[in-house]
Image (tube, rainbow, N blue to C red; front, side):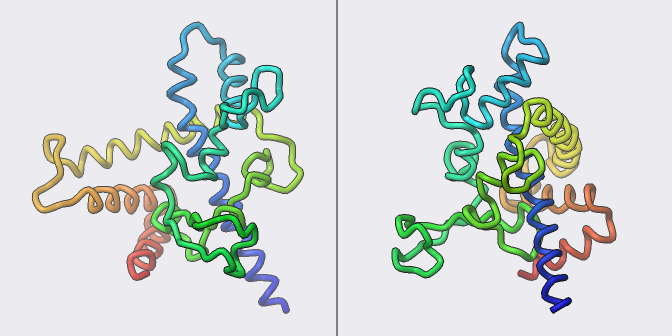
Length: 211
């Protein structure tokens, strides 16, 4: 029983950690649109990030039906978030197809998080969790200020990634024989090591490649 509880706690930590990184990634994707807007105060920027993340209109309602928040786009795997997932076909009567209306399951690509646990939209990655400020059920909605902080953190890491990319490229082009996938994998490997520490990052990197 203790082992089971320990395993459950470890899985919960993985999900929480990855969910926070997902929030940061979405916040960063909001940054360009918000920060390119002219004449906005910091308060205006935070308000817009809040509305665009959650899909709310200025009055705090769901607004026009055509307004789809970035969080919803993420969970639907549409627009700029379409490349984050592996898409698995689902049979309508599959026991894991709880809504019985889905034709596919969205699974966050393992190379995006480097954990052994699968992160599936609708299970580990849910709107209820990702819209919250504490990544717990029934938590207050994440604020524009927190989203702004997340975006700035991701931006700092983006600068590190750019430096790694420039070292890998040759005059702005891929090295001879390298593919786009090689480039992407190298960048993700090096960023994992940069953020998690060289020793831990190296061992997990090797495990990820063996999968």
